[in-house]
Amino acid sequence: MKTLKFSACGGWFGGDHRHMIEETARYGFHAFESLGWRGLDYGEVRRLLDEKNVTSTALLISSNKEEYASKLGNGHGMVWEDSREAFLEGFKETVEAAEAMRVPNIVVTSGNERSDVSREKQHEICVETMIRLGELAKGHDVTIVMEPLNILVNHMGYYLVTSAEGFQMMREVGSPKVKLLFDIYHQQISEGNLIRNITENIDLIGHFHMGDNPGRLEPGTGEINYTNIFAAIQKTDYDGYLAFECGRSVENDVLCERMHALIDPFAD
Image (cartoon, rainbow, N blue to C red):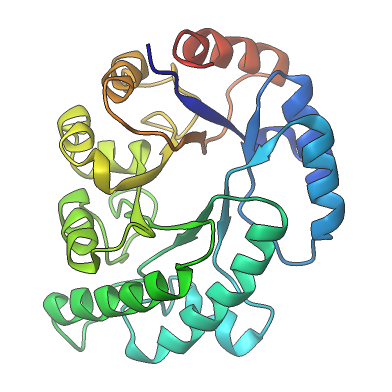
């Protein structure tokens, strides 16, 4: 039976990158996710990752140049034509960090919806920027993953909400280097129908985030049946990571024991 790869939430452990990596290994996980990279000593992080046999699974696109960084967040974002240079230059900086630390995914977001142009135009702008990003990503061992977010609870005003539009974007981009980040928590709130949406479009998904609803705490605290979702994904050809991105309702000793009980039947 095919096995799945899981990534712990770095936020569970707190502290700096060194502490997150050490705690990830101590609690028996082979990967963790902490999206920030600015200010890190890439060589030192890589050395510790190798020593502990741990993978860092995703970085959020950013830039050390404030004029670019300010255009990458949701207050501006990919829906604006004038952010394209920021995304392209931000990718060049972020991919340097990702390759130095062997991180396989770079996360991008759409930004908040504009009121001055149509949704169709904003869709078109995002697709063109992702096409350009996909061209830059050729020759690099990373996948760019675009994340839809919910607007009912957490990200009011955000542009890309539904997986249907996200998948359509991926089809229009047409690059194996650009895929969707399917956040199971966000999509449960936005649309439900999780297993069908996932399995019918698995070739367009490059990464998963996980949390339960309501509350965005660890799986098992809400309404999402993760056991059935894992079983459905296991039947596909998906070979990326499923990353916990959620809070916790209990201390780490109990939390990690519970999460291993959930994921170990599906993991290597």
